[in-house]
Length: 84
Image (cartoon, rainbow, N blue to C red; front, side):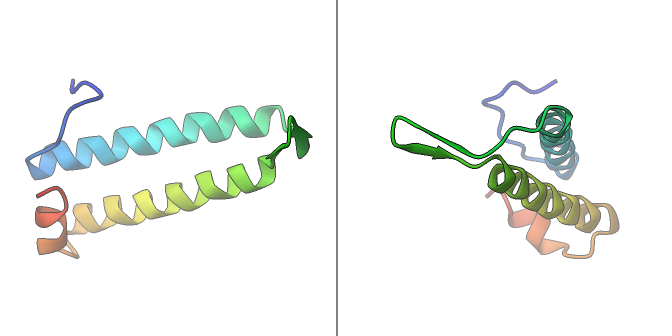
C-alpha cells in the first residue's frame, strides 16, 4: 500500500490513489454530517461548516468524475498525463 508521499505512475496506481482520496473524503463528510456545527467566529477567524461541507462534496464529485473516466477510459490521454 502506498505511503502519503507516494506519486502514482501506472494507471492502476492512479486509480488506487483516486479511490483512496474518495474514501478519505467520505470519512470526513460522514464525521462532519454526524455532528453538524454552526458557523461561528473565533479570534477574528470565521468557521463556516456549511461551506466546508460544500467544498468536500465538490471535491468528492470531481474525484468521482475522474474515477469514472479512468474506469471507462473516457479521457484516455488525460489520465495518462495527469501525474506527469
